[in-house]
Length: 133
Image (cartoon, rainbow, N blue to C red; front, side, top):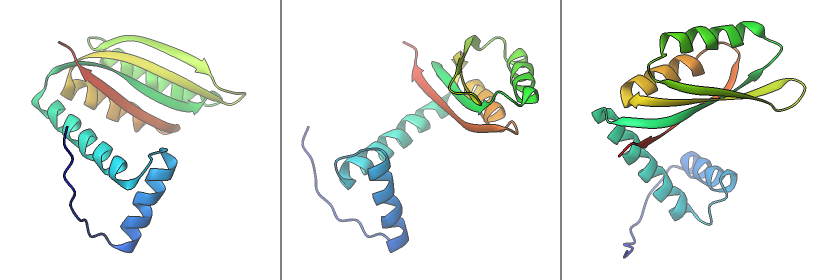
């Protein structure tokens, strides 16, 4: 695939944020990071057409907060048609990683993910999706 060069003008603050993103994600240069961000945005736009997709919601939270686990379980009960499986890993004495395997219309998975990630006590959450052929 051929590559076309073009210039980009950014405010200094935005450039620093881009450089931080490059370093944190181990990109070899800014161009690679910008390509990644554009491709990520294009993939996310495709989900808006409501394809059937499969994916995973990853959640990190403290195992010392039992109400977080209960809220996750309650939320998953309401999305039983799109939830395939869950798995919990103990990361250390305090934190758990929970992976929720999902499949269904992209809007439903995004809705579920948003509800899970917004539960008070969730330290980090992310949804990854792939189109099902």
